[in-house]
Length: 235
Image 1: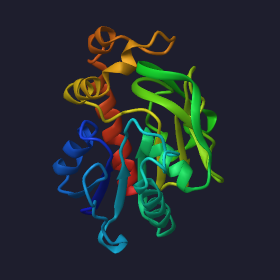
Image 2: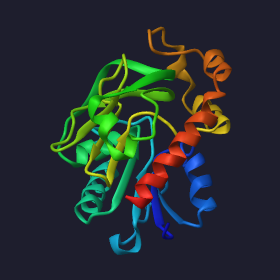
Image 3: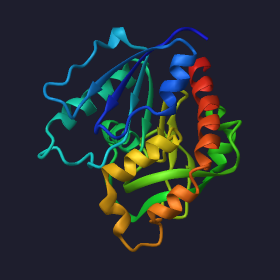
Image 4: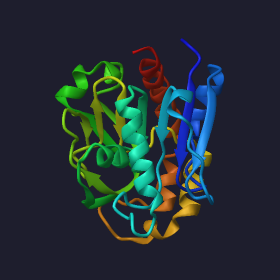
């Protein structure tokens, strides 16, 4: 595996790379970042990176009036895709990829927070990036928005609350609505960072106690993600 120059976008202090950072450092890849929540965030030149990873956050892709930097971010994502970079989006990141490719992003029918199963679609079962993943898998969710599939995208997985849980455009652009990357520390940081969401009474929102009781799923999620990242790196 070649050494990669991985740049990531972070939107809030409590949603970082988590186990993706462990995987990158284990394989000797170079990491750099843009923190959009800081004053005057800096973007790299496209020829300075191989991968772009777009992380999560509680904002919506459509909140450009409140957060003007979203326009700049989506433009960079589109330029990275057009330049043939590998682009991975997680939760908000998947929504930003969809938006950058011209698809609508909007509130879904249900908020989905906690450990809930996803199922691979027929396209997911046949896609090389998802080839070694179980057909059904319990993953960590924290989202309320969903999106239309971008033109040319394949939906790879869905859940009872959200039909579009994963999509791919070719073999270099991947959006995951869920959080494969979370570690126990990362889950606790997300709970601390956005605790009010857990106070809602809704069918797909788990309590803090239930989330923490099932935190053992994080290890399995991280193992599956490591395999997925390896396939992305060698595709």
